[in-house]
Length: 310
Picture 1 (spheres, rainbow, N blue to C red):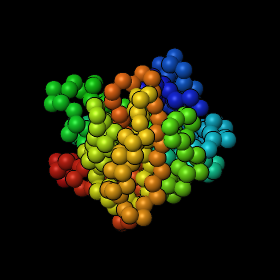
Picture 2 (cartoon, helix red, strand yellow):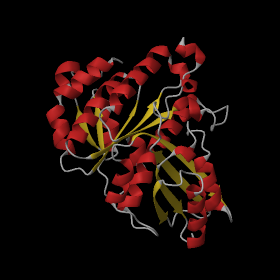
Picture 3 (cartoon, rainbow, N blue to C red):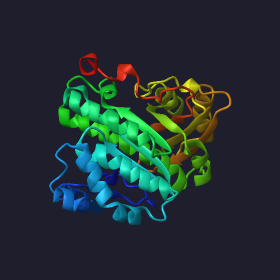
């Protein structure tokens, strides 16, 4: 949430939920609404890495959470999975949100391998519970980030990259709904792709120069974050963000790349936005849903290192 506030989207209300009262101080300072849950269970001291404590804290504060969500059309639940509060509270928050009638989308991260077997197991269990209470869940494996960041990236910077992926997912969907642009879509369009969609995948790409839009589209559908072939997707939401001089032809070429690489009958929703602060770069966020398979994308065996799966 703190990272999202650095590039906040208008029309979006941000809430930071935690069992640790002290940790909420920074979020509040950045302008987020805050909710300290489970004061009777944790006394504001955190969940101690125990998902059961996180769950009980959210259940204790269920009425406050429901009041927070009331009247919301689209609710994003973002969290790092594996710890106590995120793993325990996120499924409860999601259940309350979906029962309220909001389109509920979870965007969560799975731990890096070096964070340990226990944390990975807690994350996997939490995601299984989360699936039952959301319309769409987008899982970003932190281990996948190792394929797109330099080998000498500091640990703190790696976690920042993980946070930024969550931010881009939320912003990518939100902006095409609430921000005026070259091509806008309405909430009903997005809902048609993401309602009860189950697991989804996210790809992010950038391009610079004459073929920036097309290059960004190719990079997005080839992203290491995608665990499954995007060709199998029957629902796609993608957002193009570029400079003020972004042409309709460039948008068309980028869109054609997406259309040519998803299921022929896919429901594709896209928006195109321009930003005066961008000079020569185009970025594209692709969210793919509707994978017809027994297991959801993002939970392949390859996602868990051998030494953690033993």
